[in-house]
Image (tube, rainbow, N blue to C red; front, side, top):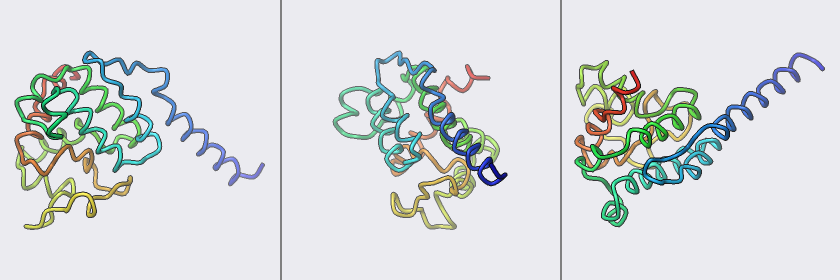
Length: 174
């Protein structure tokens, strides 16, 4: 076997193990939510569909009213179980090679002094005065800027993402 074949075999083996790493890990939700569909989409690197499923799962966490309206109030985020938000974040982190997830977004947000304009630009949601149009102008692959995904209903303004980035899960992880 030549070195190119060995590299390709190694790459396919690492991709395969990366995509199945969560199979043996607990995806047990304190809220009784099934995260398998999100895991499957992320393992396939179908980031656009995974983004939509992430919002659905967040709405499930928020309850029947949020499921019906298909978006969140910032006050609902505060009630999310730590374990559930951690599962969502861990799945995004794992399947994006550490590039996407709420913890990545939080790190960037804190790094820019919680300045929203700098944050939006840094994660690719805004260029100058122009917002990145959802979904057509978002980058749905690993070439996206660090922290670009999940979008988590970015069209609803700052309060929901501020609640996500300030959730108690992040202090429990440190």
